[in-house]
Length: 246
Length: 223
Picture 1 (cartoon, each protein chain N blue to C red):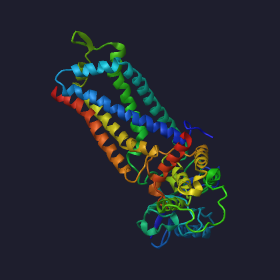
Picture 2: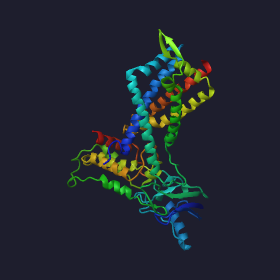
Picture 3: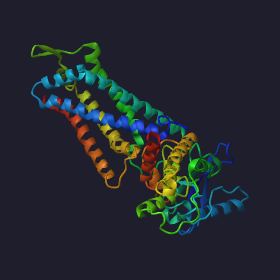
Picture 4: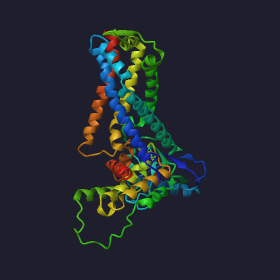
């Protein structure tokens, strides 16, 4: 398969940046998107040009490092996958593919397609943990937890913090991320102890970092590679409002 | 730490509460309007308008209503500016995600509704309140503003009818997202009841906006 790539190139955080057009040919349809970029980069290296910088780590869809905004969608046209699990068969031969970094004020571009997502770390530091002493590993079934709650907590904990929700949101809101991180604790007894403090601190940090406000468009849910549901955002709203009002 | 009025979720709380209040107001407004085309005379409509303009409880509600409008508009604009600021550099190719269609245009539909609101207030509310350019009608020996005649004269003009219909279609777009979105912002989400709320939102939107659109059309063609 042959593709024309329009890729955002930016030397460093303060550089202006521009789109560059590249051609890649003879790409296998089983190639992942990142492998296709590897092939492009090898071409560039062979020509003594600077390869395209992009984030990646596990390449098996669980780390959340890859962060490419492909043809107007985070992680590209496939659903419920990260860019490393996106395969070139999802495109048509001869397609022009536009590749951009995540765009949000709290996610500044470091180089090319790499953005600084440490804003998410700041939010976690603000309260995304349990600081009470829960002791050693308890015997099975000593803390009864309803099956449904355990499942909901696990669904929320599936968030890999990739930032696709922020990238997809027209408001660059981090609500789905924060909702997932708040929910995974809110559903479990160990997390309930500090639930009020946690939600207030994490929301305050999210606002302070300059993320936008949620307008319930649902773009985050549609693009989340782990399919985190909007119902977690409703829970975040509930948790926050009850912590503030009650 | 921020408080409930300045945090992002707090601002959305204000947005949704004010929005739902305005949703209720629309029903009251529509009920009174419909009396104009249902009854044979303007009497029920004029009396209702008189009651709304003079009753002390309604007078207090009027202030709350204006407050609701201002709150909804102020927070809406404020949130939108913050949201634009959150993405200073825009995508070259953006917004191809699967989202609710109407949610993308809330600020745009809101701007049109605001223009409509100003014209609407100048047409009727301020005419009766300030300028006194309203014909009078006498029922049981008491004088009333004949707002019914004012409305009918207005809706005999084709361009006014079209303007009103277009504005209510825009309002329908606004409500289609706004109604269910308000419940989500309040954290009222439930596996069983959220589909009910969404359906209610669509039913409410269709009936209320169709009701408002029916009045100028009915007056133009059949009165």
